[in-house]
Length: 309
Image (cartoon, rainbow, N blue to C red; front, side, top):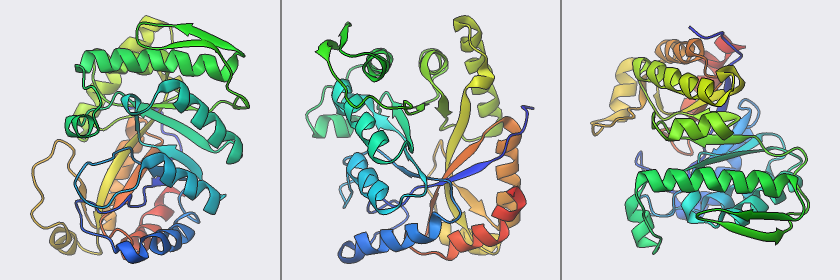
């Protein structure tokens, strides 16, 4: 069991319609703003996810939504969970992150991954190379990003990307923490060991998480890092209700998933979060099933959050 650290909670507002149900387009912006005004009193961070057409319904682009949230709500940390490296030129992405870090007063956590959803790549006309190549591109993009954030001008010549006396002013001070999302034990977790301040794991069961943590520790030993230097976070989709029966009714017939949501009552949720904390996780990023409703969020605040404070 890892040393337990204080568990923080992040909140992911709906980027649009979700698998849990639709939103009202006419009131979407107002509903999100009102929800966030409540949420930022209890959650330390707000997160947006990077999909452009995960499904064919209404959805906002991740970075645009996060910038809007940053301007409207000056309290929480701001994170991306996680950007797909392939969707934007990494030099431009480094500049965008530096700008938001400056404009938000240093609140950004720069979450990024290798990308995975093939239909988005093909739909938007982006190349979709193999997983191994996408991870190699991610690793190179992170080296380029760090260079742009600390050197002026920055020159870089890689296999996939290049810079020629590029300026990234204002350089971020401090640079945003880098959070890498993904669980591939052979290649992706090595990139985490090399470059990450945070690891964002999508694994669900505790036995799988333990195996992935052990794989990350092995990569850290190989590159000369202490695994404990890398903070750990994970997402949860939450169907929370006063009773187990009500939670199951809310969830309905969920399709099989390698990332099953949490479905249950406050006591069961406290147990699950404690289990994650015991494994060493310091942040759980949550998306609630009621979308813009506050009943389940209020239940979390009243019956679960005090256990961790």
